Amino acid sequence: MKLIKKIKVNNPLGLHIRPAATIVKLLQNTKSKVFFTYKKQTINAKSIMSILILAAKKNAKITITIEGSDANAVMTTLTNNFENGFGEKEC
Image (cartoon, rainbow, N blue to C red; front, top):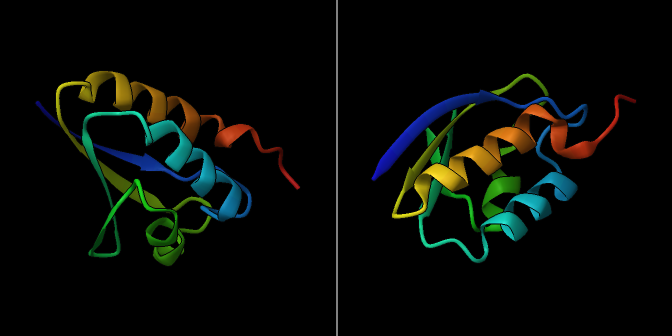
C-alpha cells in the first residue's frame, strides 16, 4: 500500500532536533518506507540527519509518502504528531 499526504509543520521552530528525534523514534519499529519531500528534495524519514537537512521551517508544507503494510497506522501517527506540533508549545 502507498499513501501520500501533504502536511503543514506547526512547530514554532520547524523540524529541529526534538521533533526530528521524535519522528525517528516513532518510525524505528515500522515496516513501511517513509519519505518526506520538501522543496523538491526527498529524504528517508527514518534518518534524523536527513530530516534536519530538509530545514523545514514553521508553516512549511511537507509531502509524506509511505509505502508498506502498516502505512495506514504510520500515516495516522505521523499526522497526529505533526498537527499537535510534536507537543511543543508556542514560544
